[in-house]
Image (cartoon, rainbow over all chains, first blue to last red; front, side):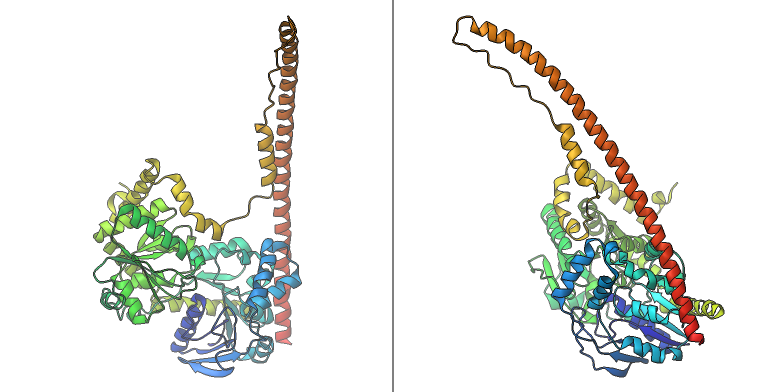
Amino acid sequence: MRLLYVVHRYHPDIPGGAEIACRLFATQMAARGHDVEVVTSCARDYMTWADVYPPGTSEIDGVTVHRLSIASPRDVERFNLLSAVVRHDPRLVPWDRQERWLEEQGPFLPSLEPWLEENYERFDAVVAFAYLYFTAPTVLRVLAGRRPLLFHPCAHEEWTLHLPLYDTPFRVADGMAYFTPEEQALVHGRFGDRAHGEVIGIGLDTAAATRFADGGVRFRAETGIGERQYVTYVGRLDRSKGVVELVTWFREFCNRTGRDLVLALLGDPVHPIEPVDDVVVAGVVSEEVRQSAVSGATCLVHPSYFESFSMVLTETWALGRPVLVQGRCAVLAGQTARSQGGISYVGYAEFEAGLERILDDPALADEMGRRGRAYVHREYEWEALLPRYEALITDMSAVTTRER
Amino acid sequence: MSDADTDPVDRALHEIEASAEAKRTSGEIPADLEARLDTEFRDIVGTPPPPLDHVARLIGQLRDFSFEIPEPANSSSIPGGQLVHRMVSSTLRRHSELQAAQLQQLRDLVADTLDALERDIAHGLEELEERRRRAVSDLRAELAEGWRAAGKRSSAG
């Protein structure tokens, strides 16, 4: 098949979840012999969308990448102001203001529509990623009915999902690829079930994801943790990810229980977290150090309130470690319940009871890690996942072509 | 025998749940500690109050309103005046209590009426919102279909 992927950012250095998912799917499909191209922005930073990578055509891991320039970098202050107005009651915002908001959300690529008009006939199907950004609603609007359109919404419960602006893009897609049953239920609840859809998830190359597992030897040496027991968090160090809550709860836990335990935070420090004796802020680390850290942790804690899928969970399970997750996030709780690879907490009492149990019962922690690993092998190995994904695109295309 | 009895992970999850509940009910983890630790969650995820929340609050204040009847002063510098004052104030007090009882009845009647109105308005708003949502949803679905049909035509042409 000749496939076009459309996404807001695309580069191996970009850490965002939707961007990584898109790159993985595009690369895996190219490796399976499909002719895969991507159209995207030149941006690396999602706050300003400033052009960093050169515009034009290049190749990344067997995928042809076309980069388009933005009109101008985002004025973050203006965008925040406009968002505050739009957020007040998304359902009542005038249409033109919603369109302006989407352009400010960005990356605003004025040449995307002409590019699509000029090139779409070369492709058998078009795949759009992430409902939130300018790129996916644009491609769905421009190519609706003209090419089979598969949509990975990357949706979770948030106010933007209720903007009427998104009603049409969600409804013109010919197929929907969901990451989890919880995301599917959310989208059905908001937009109805009108397209051919399936829960696909995001695949994992478990051999690569465990290549540097050393039980924490390298991580302990690099951070000076020594032999102390530690739990870890991997992801953006951001309030919206629940990291501030995690640090507060962790300190409360240590004060109340008197345990000698370290919380190791790995990821981009968007929100400044002050390192203290029990909290180590390792920041952005290499893949080697990350795998070492997780493989040696007693468990991984995931406190995020908003997720449409957690690759960090599948990677942790591939390394055979259990997780302690935010139960107020339906997706994290759902993934954990299905895998039996950990514990969900909804309040501090569950957090404390869960963490105590994991610390006191290493056999249980190991068993949860084993079940998580088995779940990942069963559901998320690319070899298991890609045939389902290909079938979804083929079935969707067949229906669309018949209709045409 | 349930899975929770036989499976070690299920059993552990049940035990953790029970342990958390015991920490709460025994006061080992007080409610105000959990409420304080939930601040960040409320700040980030917090939902706006329901649309008639302020009306319900005012009705609650009305129900809590009580009518105070001050004790009349009985002292007098005139000989025998205190007796006269006591007789007059006793009559006045009975009269005031009767008025206060009527005002309390009126307060309850007004609060009941406002309660009923608030419920009806809230119900009406919900119904209106649901009808509006359905109508907009149907319209958008039609629009999306029209959009796809237009795309097909332009593609075929």
